[in-house]
Structures are given as structure tokens and as C-alpha cells.
Image (cartoon, rainbow, N blue to C red; front, side):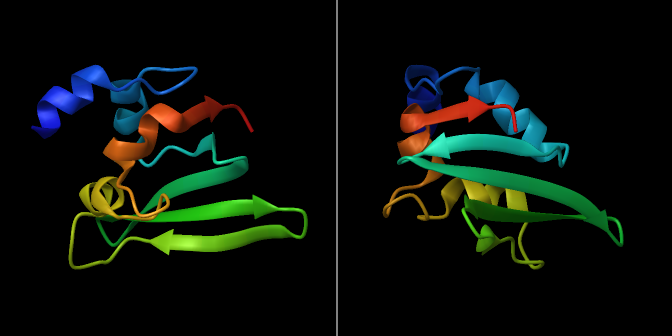
Length: 100
């Protein structure tokens, strides 16, 4: 089950539960996956949380994913198959939490 996997998987350079808590609070997060650097940011918009993911490139940033206003964006982000066809929970052991 998903809760069992959460206990087994290991985000590099940090605790996955703390990382996900930061997502819920809309904190800015930087991490590496597949040799690429990503930036995740959240902000409050009319009382709800917006969430957006960018891949950082040599030319700046490239939009990768944005939460849907009809669904709580944190859960949508965690379940989205944006990591080579995997969800966050299936890919987080290959991610590394980094400072900007």
C-alpha cells in the first residue's frame, strides 16, 4: 500500500515527510531528478493553494506542471505521473533535495 511505500522509500538529502510538509505549506523547494534541477513553489490565491513546478534550464525556467484548481494541488502533484511516467511516491527515492 501507499503508506507502506512511504515508510520504505528514501528521498536523498532529506526526509520525505518533511519535504511533503513543505509542499503543503507552499514553501519553495529545489530538488534534482534525472540529472535536472527542479523548482516547486506554492502560493495562496483567493484562500486556496496554487502549486507550480519548473525545470531549471540554461535559458531560465521551463514550466512542467501546475495544479488544477478543482483538486487540492498537493495530492495532485504527489500522484501526477510527471517523473518518467512515475508518481512522486514512486520516484522520490531517486530525487535529491537541494538548496537553490
